[in-house]
Length: 463
Image 1 (cartoon, rainbow, N blue to C red):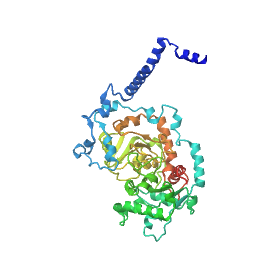
Image 2 (image 1 turned 120 degrees about the horizontal axis):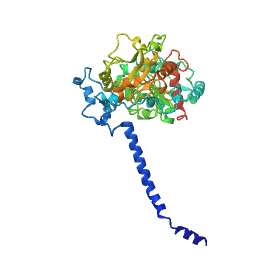
Image 3 (image 1 turned 90 degrees about the horizontal axis):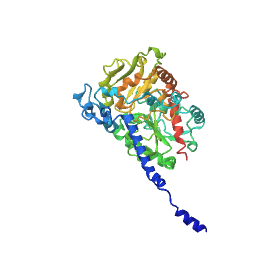
Image 4 (image 1 turned 60 degrees about the vertical axis):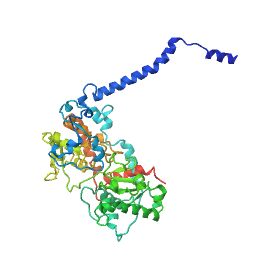
C-alpha cells in the first residue's frame, strides 16, 4: 500500500504554468543581477556616458608616468624610484584636462563613511571600552625578554640603547629601544616572556663602517644563527614570537638572507606598505616616524588657520610631481618646492590641512608634524598601513585621498563642512599624545601604543 502511494506521487503531473515558473526563475534572477551591476557601474564611474571622466580610458590625453619623470616634461628634478615606486607608481595616472575636477567621483559621505551612523567616525578609537580595559591588562602583565649583551660587546653601539636622546628622521626605533630597556615590561626570566626582542639597530648597522648596507644582511643572518643555537626560544616557534625595530627603508632588505625571520618574526617598521613583499599587516607593526620637536607650539587656535592646505618637500615621486603641477601656483593650497628656510611650524599653524604625500618611500614624518601643530593630516600615500590602525579610527582625525584625486584635491577639502572640520581638529588634539616619543615614556604615548600593538600579536604565538 505504502509503495503504491509513493509510486503514484512520483507520477503526479504538474500544470505547465508551474513548470514555466521554475524554468524562468533563474533566468530572471540572472538578468536582474546583471542590470543591478550595470546600474552600479553606471552611477559610480560614469564610464558609459562620459569616458573622459575615467583616467584609465584616456591614453592620449593623460599624464603618463614617463611624462612626469622625463625632465623635459617638468620643471622639477628627475623623480627617483624606491623599491615600491618601481611597481606601485606604474599604476599612477592622472588626467590632463580640468574637466576631471568637474566630474569629481568623490562624495563627502564616502570620504568620511557618512553613509551610515556618523557617530562611529567621530570616535578616535574603534572601541574605547575594549581598548582601555585591554590596555590595563597589557600594562600589568605583558613581559618581554631582551637578548642580553654586555657593554664591552664589540657591537654595543648597535645592540644597546643610547645614553643621549636621538635626533633625526629615523629615530623612532632608537626611542622605542631606549624606552623598553627602562620599562617594567622587561623580564629576566625568558620562561615568563610573551615575546623576545632582538635589539640590533638597523639604523646604526647601516652607518657602522664595519657593516654598512653591504654587510647588513650577513650581520642579521649571523645574529639569528647565534641566538637560535645559544638559546632554545627561536626554534620553538621559528621566530614567530621574536621582533625587531627599524625605521629606515633599508630594513626592507635586511632579512633577505633569513627568510624564516622575514616571514615569521614581527617587524616594527616605519616603511609599512602593503605593496612591498615581506610586510604583513596582521603580523607586523607600523611605527610612527618623527622629527623630534624641541618646543611645544603652544596655543593651537583653529580660527587663525586661514589657509586651506600646506605641503613642502622635494619632488621624488610621481604623486608629488602631480601635486606641484596642479597646485604649485594655487592661492588656497600652498605647495612649496623644497625645504623651508625655517622649520618652525609657522606654515602648519596657519593651515587647516597638512599634506602627507608619498615621496621616495611611503612614510615621512609629515603626519606627526601635522598632529604636533594641530593640523588635520591629509594622507596621499596609497597602500600605507598607517600607525596604530588596530586601535585608532583614522577617519576621525584625518582625510585619506587617493592618488587619482590630486586634480580635485581642493574641491575635496573645501567640501568638508565647518562642523566636520571642527571635530577633525578636535580629534587631532586628542590623538597627538599617541604619536609622541617621550623620555621617559608616558602612558598612552607612542611607546605604549606600540607595546599595545605587540600585545595584540602575542596571543597567536604564545607557547
